Image 1 (cartoon, rainbow, N blue to C red):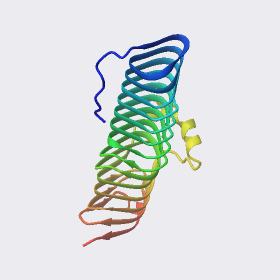
Image 2 (cartoon, rainbow, N blue to C red; image 1 turned 180 degrees about the horizontal axis):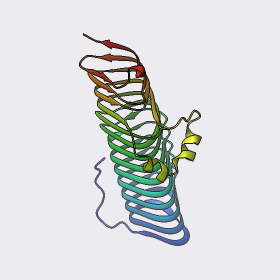
Image 3 (spheres, rainbow, N blue to C red; image 1 turned 45 degrees about the vertical axis):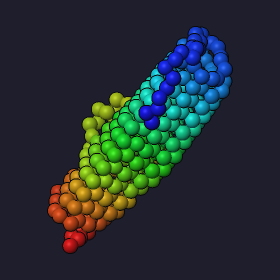
Length: 271
């Protein structure tokens, strides 16, 4: 995004306890307690703790949220840090994005450096540069980034594409298709899964929740390493099929290593 913001003071909003204010252009907006902004908000800083509702679009340099946060429109900022429960009714765009707790975006999410812990749901498309997820990620459409790292569980109903994909399975992981240059899928540390109490969350997200496994129709890349993976087709150059895999068909150009011959029904070398 890298947008420039007015450095001149445009006036501040400060709400402590319970109150509301009209939208507009401000320097700093600080809310502690229960606050509401009625209308679109343009500011350098939005800092809120407690229960906050913005009844419009938000354009800000920095947004720091602790507690309950709801935006009725789109959100665009350079940096977003949220902890607690957040909901954006429109699209979300941030260069630096981090959230812990629970977050829901009803539109698209786009960011450069994104880090999530807890539970996050994207109703449309997730795109950006770097994404690190610890906990549960739910994406209704495609997830398209350059670097993808997951420590926990996810449900991506479309395509998962990235140059480099590292998945440490800490629950049920599912993507319709997975594509990248380097793909590494391993069973992750169970302490991550247990720490966030993901068992109940995953049961509500996935009707066929079946524990620590990754499922995908097609996995395609250059260098591929798999553990605890179920797939119809795995296609690539050099492929390693490790423990607890169920692969119907492997297509490879370089080298193929299979730990357990029962893991693969059919393998074909492409000349």
